[in-house]
Structures are given as structure tokens and as C-alpha cells.
Length: 146
Image (cartoon, rainbow, N blue to C red; front, top):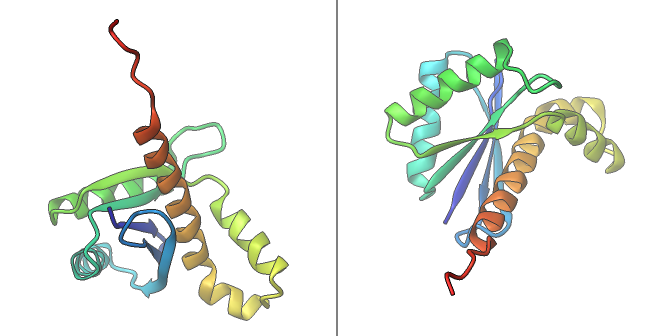
């Protein structure tokens, strides 16, 4: 199953795709779009053109697990994507941007280059979380009825 992961932002939205087997991260890109309706349309086009079967949309919960304003915006985007026919699953994305900054800093990527790529790296981290969750769901053992 090919998965499209989304790190939804006010101006820049990171997108990452898995390979066809849904095993590893592949292509990444950043969309620059401020208007949610147009962004949802662009994401739906990418989903269809890349043959994705699931969209993993980051859910930016507060550190205590509560929903804040950003989480509400992400949930609204999920509904806009579902209305366009996408299968959407919300993925807890707490600290993904912090982790993405750390990864890029460790790789020696400067601040200016980091700003243009950070959302794609965060989307890749969301994708990795989604892939792990799906793998765990497939490997859960069902008790025998013996």
C-alpha cells in the first residue's frame, strides 16, 4: 500500500510518499499554498497521480495530548481531503518538527536551506510513524480459539 504523509502548515506543507510496498519513505516535496481549499485540491491531485491509497495527516496535539487550534485546523483539512475521496488517517505528530530540525542540523544543513526543507523532513517522520503503526497492526497476533 502506497502512503502519502502530510505535515500541514499555514504556508508550507510537507509531503512524503512511501514506496509501492508501503515499506520505506521515497519521494518528498513541499507545497506552498496558504488557502486550505486549494491546498486540499493539490493534495488530492498528488494522492491520485502517485497512486496513494492512504493519506497520513499529522495531528499536532499539545504536549498533554489535548487538541489546540492547530489540531482543529488539521482535522478540518482531513475532512476536506475525505470529501475529495481520500482515505485519511490522523497521526500524532508531536515533536516531529523538533526532530526534523535536529536531523537537519546533524546533517550540517544551514538555516536558510533548512527552512525550505523542514516540512518535507517532518512529513517523512510522520510517514515513518504511519508505516510503523500499519506494520504493527498487521503483525498483531490473534489468540487461537482452541
